[in-house]
Length: 171
Image 1 (cartoon, rainbow, N blue to C red):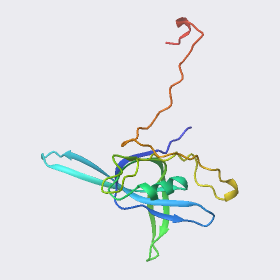
Image 2: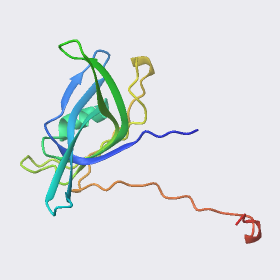
Image 3: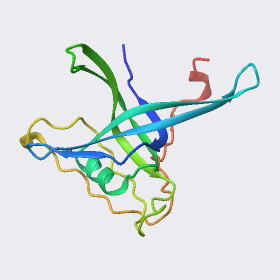
Image 4: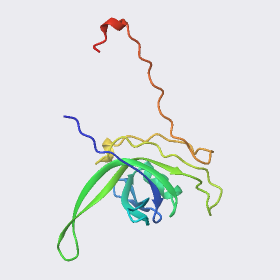
């Protein structure tokens, strides 16, 4: 049976990304993204509920995050939900959730309160970070885009061609 683990988040950064350069050349950027849901409850009161997500980007995307992402930026993130087990200072085992992103796109204008830098769409990361440098493949290099809000391009659908007539359809 097939399975799917996919998260899509559009929200705002709570702080600048924390970027670490690891032994072996790997780079990881972590940051929090807030999503806000606004609705009216049964009593007619307006309610605003914010959820926070911990996101991590690896290698080339981590470098892009370090350069372009800043606190308050609106960002689109797509990736997988990961469970992490850890022990706190008191020795108690804890669990947390993290999104390992494979797609990140800056939304809106990146120049709010900053110098004139172009918007940027990070290259997609297809696999988890390599464990050794010998297995690492170079990431594709992407040039910055010059438009204010880059649009995500979807591949063109392949047209369906059938050699059979309508009589062969099962319905």
